[in-house]
Image (cartoon, rainbow over all chains, first blue to last red; front, side):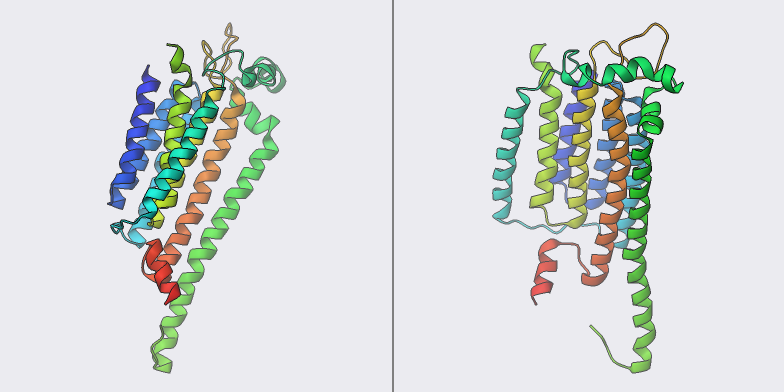
Length: 189
Length: 116
């Protein structure tokens, strides 16, 4: 029952995020949204995912967004165009098609669902004797799919390098421009 | 109780479409990234809902328990959360850079400046 309420809250928070113009409030709503998602993951037995979502989604993500807000602006400009109606139509049609698609899905928690009948039993029954760690998520993450986790680390490194290049180069160029300006005595655009 | 079985998926579709709408209809770049986040989290909920096993418990071995939720989607989503944050960081860095160059983070004003 709790997960149904949490899901309804998440939908409300998401819709509020569309309506609100103040970006600070929108970012706070994102934090609430991530925290609700983390609680929902606990209800759905995904405790490791819940911890990560609470720490990374509700923590680091919000700090990054607030930092961006501090460097840019915190009010969204009001803008009413016909484009919004077209977007709404596209969204409703896509959503309708997706909901039609869910009608063939197995019910949540169904033991006969394909997700539970092929690979999963091997990991839940043999991973403790094969790897020796009681937490199956850890043994899959660090051992069976260790290479995948290495790939994840490479992605994070690449992202960090990209951020440094994007922001760092801009700062360096600005400093250079500021140094050049007085010597040449001309205004640049 | 029969219809509750698909409730998770329907809310996932609603969340996904709210995120999609923000990305395509709203002009503010920070808001677009928030929309991407909402979309992304809805996909996470979808995968975790698939992993849920009725009567099962969290996938941590306890003597005498044989029913666990499927650990494979959990691992996939753990990776996806971290990668998602890395991509958000790159997106926000681009927003900061765009603001430095154009002085605005509204899509239509950026287009207007490009055409001028």
